[in-house]
Length: 370
Ligand code: SF4
Image (cartoon, rainbow, N blue to C red):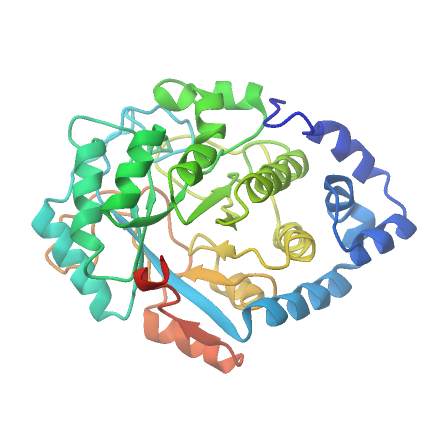
């Protein structure tokens, strides 16, 4: 396992420790004031799983304390599905047969306006790896189009240089999201068959470059199902802690994408059930009480409903994983993966309100960036 900092503990060794955790150590981990990576690992143990209800209650109370009765909402907008990457698990990989398309600047404006009309003020712009059709300049222009229309623009795209992150921040991008996918370098090498994403280290250090370049926050995650989930989550926890220590003025957000159906013949080697995923979310909330934890529409409605406000504080809604997709006359490209929660914004907000939660569409304004 590649180290990001000198004090990075081997996630595989910690995973072994967590496997033999006793009830007393779970109790200490549940009440630790500054939980270590080892204590986080213990909360992922089977012994801790027997106390899932207690973990849920603690996660719920911490979420209420730090985020109130709110769930902030965002929406993804795929700009392009061109990609030079060969990620085995992705429907946009360059060997997948599908119509390739990218939005023009006018189309981006129309999509963002359509999303604003739906109520969204927080938009995540996505592309595949750099291609001549969708390169850095294209992405920057799309940020310039979107940022005057909505209050928060984030980008989930290829790993960039520090200079590119700085340019993107100046163009109006507040945040980047980049999943390491897996922190196991051997599995990483096997799954990233070709393309720039094969460079594990360049990806691992991308959030450092982005935050050093002036991004307000950085999102991270691992694609659950690609490798041993316990050691991947332990590595993710240490990655997030490293960013918090190094960039204490900035924010981090953590997502929990669980691999789901996509174009191609990839079948994930690990399967993570709802209880395991819930335990992971609760462990992060207990150990990182004030970090936004994100759940997307990859997950089925019943699970999302149960997790909203119980650990999870940020959610996507009404998402499309095709290019564009929010303007009726859009070209229908294949999606990057299948969405499980297909409810529209009104229905999703209704669900949140029925649980006493307030959907928040805007929780950031550039005026705060003094
Ligand atoms: S995960 Fe990203 S880089 Fe990999 S094939 Fe999909 S779009 Fe391309």
